[in-house]
Image (tube, each protein chain N blue to C red):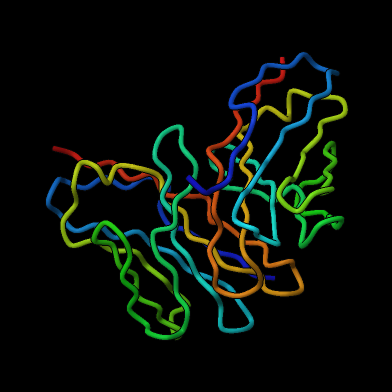
Length: 113
Length: 115
């Protein structure tokens, strides 16, 4: 089925370790986003991309980096994980500007110990 | 900057009762507004969206929302709650072109349906 695929689904990291979360979409969407979801805080935007080769910071970008080398993929990296980065991470994509809703992935649950 | 406020982080209703989840938005221009539903351990699914074509918007699973500009509200309703409606609901507003079309989400409302 077409959609947004996130890998991995679960991960436990030790403080200071690094990792990369992969988001892949097969809908030819231009715009892609990384959000984190924490209890009582809704979803907060980490970084986003409006096209291949472009990225921009969102509301909570510190401690994260992203890359969009291919249109269908959007990678989120944690260089040195901290317990404060324990969260559920969601990737989303949308066709373009306008009233198109987002298509979300199923999420990555990350625990940093 | 756009923002949304969801009143009530937890709402409980009896099965068959009216569901009302509140959302107020802050936007300097006519907004694009959305409601999403999240079932446990899943991603968010689009319930409905406001596109200015009509103030009353019908979505999936019997939900609807009414856009009221004078009240800056976009409340979600369902006439008769079903057990399967138990989930977390998020209201969102689109930020528009200057923000890369990012969405601003409310903090969510957890709906419990009591048998």
